[in-house]
Length: 70
Image (cartoon, rainbow, N blue to C red; front, side, top):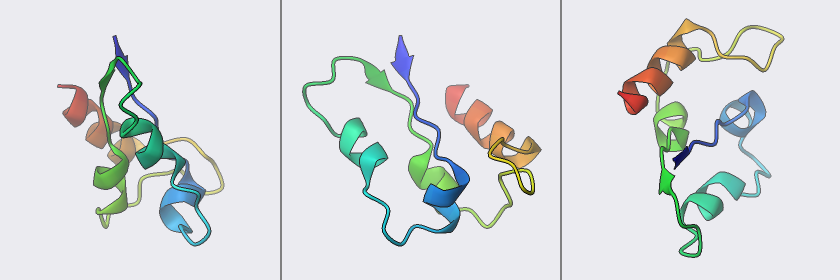
């Protein structure tokens, strides 16, 4: 079993004020499951990852996540 926390658009596109919940959870030593992280990948890309006016991924976001899974 893996944990994969998917960043929402606000976390990636407007990071000011973000509470760093994803990195904190992913670094928690008490968590006893494998982590599949895309947080840094999403943060560091210039691709548009989300559909306009929506919180769902577009094909770019889906392909980045699938690449991490594979």
